[in-house]
Length: 482
Image 1 (spheres, rainbow, N blue to C red):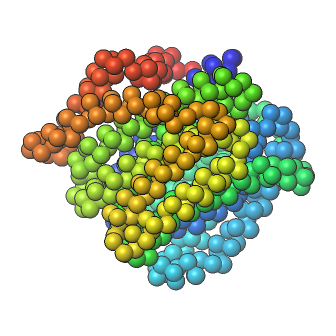
Image 2: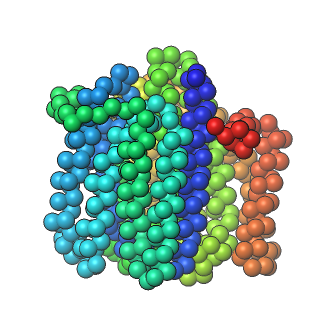
Image 3: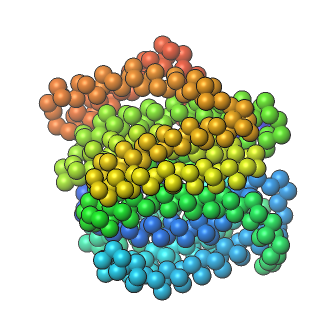
């Protein structure tokens, strides 16, 4: 199979994986949101901060280092797997012992047990992390999709049943552990030709850490950046307000994070294989950026347009306070995949030091938004986040231009078609909402259908290249899924 066919297959199965898993997760989250309270989501959001930080340390940038290395051996995989498992146990012990301090900080006694149970997921995930890395390296996204979908189905059923039986926030926490267990078991059973030995070489850890450490610290700063707003909202306000904010952020991340995941996990191994061919690398990268911007603008701006009917229809009127949060956060979400894909090319070219600088800069620029949130409230905080990301995006383009000669002007011209399409297709939908005096479900249906029709119409009229690319991928998925 050629690199081009592997890339297309990787994109196809990554899209299938993401679409199926997150559609199912989205459907389950709707059911849970109707059963659970905003405070339940707030409690889970508080604990998620510390789990996310721990996962960054466990990965240590090794996943990127292994994918980038062209001649990985059994010793590479075996040593990193053992290291990850040992580190996961140590970090769980730290979380277990400090759970009382975390609980006192948020003044939420229930956090002690929540953190101690949720932390078990670190060990479960570390036990099979190397298998997931290996499948990504060989571009076997089909198997990853199948395993991920099974894990999501099983954990989703568990969460709905537990929520219905009145287990509140525990339904979210336990289902997460179940998903990790199912995924880990299947990865071990379906590990194809990956060979592992009970063998540990410290020099291999040092070798990979020299490259991965910069990515790890960058990821750590990135995770702290993403979660410090949860900590601020949870500390200053209350669990209900944090629940509204978390729900809105999760909805926008349903699109921005998934686009980012699909693009990043496929493009990194693909671009790594052609890193020596500058012309091919830039051409492939430009196509990926245009496709990313096309999807980001359409999906996130579409969510802005239908936000109110979307929230009321899916999770009920009790979640209406989250609507303005969602609309503002969608503008934030547009820049996240664009920044990520620009950072990706730096790692491909071995400039993880620049990636670390970018993430550090993003956090420093976000400090004023935290101050605004503390004194002026959540709306001011989100606007501050948006401004800081816009500045970060311009700076990351400057860095990527240094390694691949892809200037700000070129990127702007490549993104412009997506902006034009959104303005033409979605602006009318936004302005007709006040005239639609129907139930929220009918309004959402009308808005969605009109949006789809106008997007297809204008894409055909404007001969949008990315539209036809995605159209062909969808056709291949429907008529010839391999």
